[in-house]
Amino acid sequence: MIWVTRHDGERVLLNDDQILYVEATHDTLLVLTGGDRLRILESPEELVERVAHWRQRIMGLSMLHELEP
Image 1: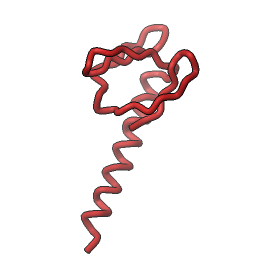
Image 2: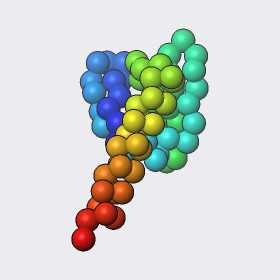
Image 3: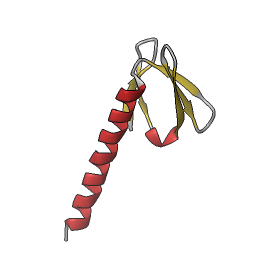
């Protein structure tokens, strides 16, 4: 889950698994698997960074659980 900022300034928590694709025009448009579209203030590069950070975080947490007795 990542935080993104809609054009009206409202921050929303987005399930990154629901992102189908990203369009980079004068703003960033997310097209979600359910067909919804979401315009956000973050750049595509920032979005990729947030998703990568989130996935590294959850992978690290899941690996810690595997090591516990």
